[in-house]
Image 1: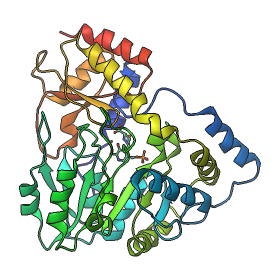
Image 2 (image 1 turned 90 degrees about the vertical axis):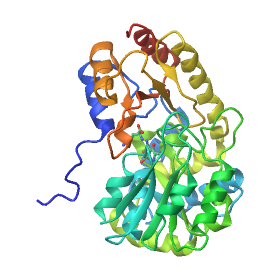
Image 3 (image 1 turned 120 degrees about the vertical axis):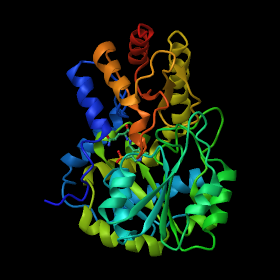
Image 4 (image 1 turned 90 degrees about the horizontal axis):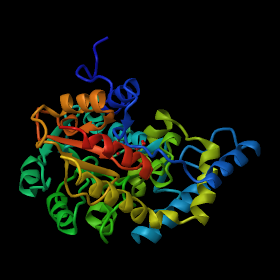
Length: 379
Ligand code: PMP
Ligand code: GLN
């Protein structure tokens, strides 16, 4: 086979989770909670299964769920997306991202993304013959230089991918960033893919700013979200894509052949849960407490945390301990000290060593405390 992704092996999340299992390390690498979701949500799923909701859902998603998503988006973003024509339920955010690329990218099209970038973006672009154009963002503040972005925009630019709050930088884009983006794309025909899966994890009184808040962006944007993050159910793989009707029509043309439809009983359960349970409003406070616990506990270790404005990831600088490249350092930390994390270098296409690891803090306090106990011993 002539590979479409010849340089791509198992993802860094698979690699580090496997390494964690092999060494029985505390797994703070791949992003997922080590606590369970709401028991009520589980019983709703089983109720729907027992009631016979076990066949194909409609291609675009169960309408009750799309209506609840629409209501939530109005409540949280103040913007109306029509359940019939502008919302599609997907098999997690990953499938939504992939479907956007499949729908938009023609061979030779350029796609601007910001590095460090979530691992699926660039390979998904390349599968469809697109060319990723990376804007490097660097520690410690990962500031976006919009002049650099502007220089990269050409007639070939098909798509710009933004991700705020950002995995892995844990930074959020501000209103001023989005205004720059508006200025840059206003007179172009490029689309925006906005990965907002961490929209309900923003800290220190900040509120999430969505591309949907800016008309110039909204009319050309696909906004992607995930119930995995919202309800601590990463294994269920249900998310959604918001986009204006013309864009949604194009998205669904591909979606119907990519996955056709998504898990039926889970969609019904999520619709009920979303209607009655607005716990996501308190999600930022819930995770901020974990973030603060971890930051404070790290003070007793040689690891120096970087600012974390959103997501459930914290970056930590290990330069006081070692000058090893990040991948080698993460592997050694897993094997010798029993704590698995993610090297930030994995999110850049070129070689970099900023002595940074990503720690997932979507964990029980006890797990975080145990991990820090181990990190204290690293010298
Ligand atoms: N985008 C980002 C930035 C993510 O961090 C993740 C999950 N870690 C996803 C997309 C994928 O979400 P899902 O699990 O719903 O496919
Ligand atoms: N999004 C998760 C993370 O950043 C990983 C998901 C995956 O393994 N694909 O850790």
